[in-house]
Image (cartoon, rainbow, N blue to C red; front, side, top):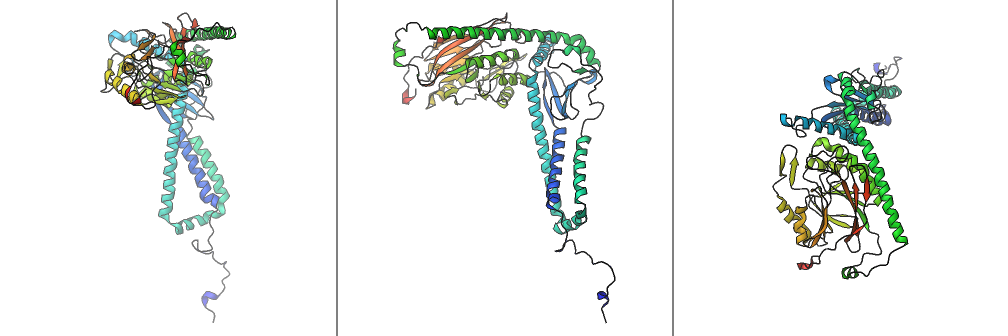
Length: 556
């Protein structure tokens, strides 16, 4: 008799259990590649569409949020919005929520209200003069925010994926996957649809965020970086009525510095022609002095050219001239002797970025922050690529440079106070000790306030000190056992006067040449830009020799 279980029933044989040897597994690309691509797509979409950063817009603090509406939208609350096409790729845009002008920038007491409003106007003018710096800073900050948010989202999804796999276990995973095996192609298409849907759903398609194409650009912005921008709400009336004041100042500013740039180039070429003519028909060479005979300049290596600027005070109009001076002089290093900003605030980041980007490619900026700078603006300068001196010797193009931030902080409406606990005298002694104890010697002390470097000169531990702060050129003069040179303001700064707009005083830069063989400065050349947009380039003047000094323990 046949067992009931052996009697054929006509039903097809059942498939092997999903967990057994005959189970059908999903292909590798569907088990691993598709989830990975989906997780990466979700992470990128979440990261990009939620990116945000806090920076400045002119004199205002502002929040920048990434959007996908292809527009830059500046939201000023009940006044309305300013909308322009986005320079970002794909359909990416930015929504800017304008916030308050920080109290640290302007005081608001009755006695200084007009001065404060004037300062705000200057802030807008600075922004118009260098909008590319703000764009650069915002783009970098938003990309950083997007990358961090994407990485965080991806890490969370990966953690959930592997955590879920661990909790479900291999047998149950196989059971759940087996019914999906026949639908691999549908799953692939579905994944693509999900990725596209995520992109569309997270786009800023709301009417509030969508740029209107019906309204024409405001004519106020014609000829500026904001040309073609559309203005909505009451802001349109405000800009059309009062925006012309800012833009007239902007256009005057642009015209002044364009003329100054042309005058500088002409003056440089004229000076170069004189030098070339002198080389072709040299005058009789006088007998060298005893010092020159004992210490001739290096003949095998070309001098290293340095460009010295100081007290820029956020006058971004001078940035193109700084760049042109570095290019024409073939400077290898730009030295910034401090006071790059006005008040050391976060809203002055675009000033720092503008000056950092003025350096030609491959030319480093070395700076010794001044009393109008701050730890925050110094951090901005570092992020922009500059080397900020902090009490240690750095070597640039073979030149050993020492310097540090100014021990004092000067703020509008608050006067001057110590940054920390160290006084100017104490910092002077510390820097002198560092220079005297350095076995390889220090070629240059770059400091903002001249007196902070005097002790190092007196002790013969540095042969040369370069500084600023006084807004007046002094030297080069022998001080102690070294030479001190104070550069005048490269912004044409005057006490109590704004540095924004056309120059109110002569702006100066100094080109110096350094002999890398004998490790000494050879000469300096003065560049001046005047209040009538004229310019001059002086001759090369020999640098004074430091007095010889004998120090103990073999220190030079």
